[in-house]
Image 1 (cartoon, rainbow, N blue to C red):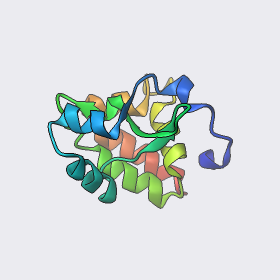
Image 2 (image 1 turned 60 degrees about the horizontal axis):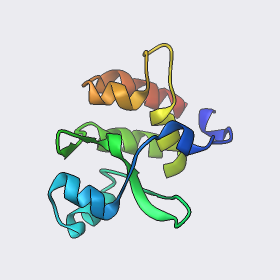
Image 3 (image 1 turned 90 degrees about the horizontal axis):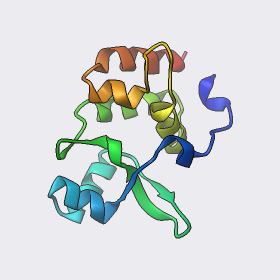
Length: 123
């Protein structure tokens, strides 16, 4: 299975991270709303950097909102057994057959293709 391999350094894949307060500002919501998004698994966060600050990839945000199709994709990958680190790694790993990365495809509205690929990982 894909997710059983060692996850490479996310800093090579994710070029920009938003701390939770920065995410709240980018979305123009309260920090409480950001925590609700995390609780609902609309987004996932990791502790990054030397200080291990709770952060999300900046590309999760598009035009001041969380990408609509992200929550369902997170659910599918989670159901396939992916950890948060593994699913972020998968979303940001270039795939020549797309082309680009799964997160870029989601940002372009290609949800069905990405969900189909994510579901296939669970088998």
